[in-house]
Image 1: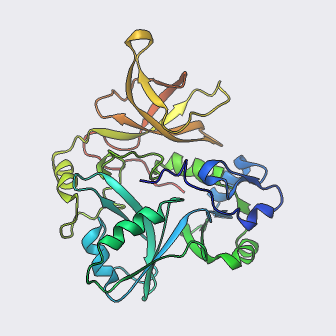
Image 2: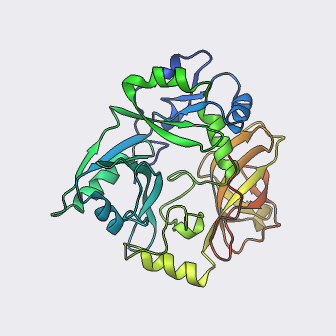
Image 3: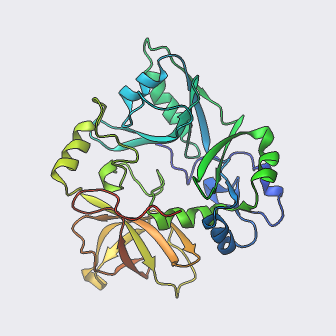
Length: 327
């Protein structure tokens, strides 16, 4: 499984030439972290204005007359009645129900277009390629030709797929430009996990609130369905995605994967790990973390020497997302 923190960087986005642009880090280095003020950019996005350059994400295209029935049989999502240009999210699970791949996309009537984490298209296409057999589908990595952007619209914020050669023209029409730091801060505040950053190899959909948004419960069999259905029926997934409110006295954020501790001194024990983190313009420093289900919600935890208060994102009893889907 590709780790976006260590995947090879793509060529820098041409939008890094916009005024004030500062490049991101790691797998996010090819796009702008901010354009001068990530706090102001968060407020811009919340107001329903602006766009975010996500052109470092991978893009794939699945063509052929049997593409939707094929995807329906392989993934957690219902593809049979998918309307043209309707965005959806799907997962591919291991036989044990662990999330191996995640992607979002839409069908245009001829092809299904999807985007995924930087560096994740290769492993995804490798797996899909082994599942083609005699099915009439064609797979292609089109990352070199197509880019992803996120546009904040007052009525319906959405992803856009843009020809790479037209990114500059898109930016001029969709502006103002807002950076990835603003986008990530709002995503974290909404309690929306990022695959391969807020998840690990043991993650099941019920732990991160993907039952519903990415897992359709009323469809036929798919790999890993038994685990998802059993946990959904019986409740009590082994872990839960949690929003952490970090101590703001420290001028730093934890590194993804940092151990989350409960207790103090020799009595402290590991109860999970931290994924993505950001500085929110209203909430201050926040992070998403995967926490053992039986950790009391009222307990203050510790990450990298910083106290961290918990806020429920996924119900520890039933595994459903419980926070409001704010912008």
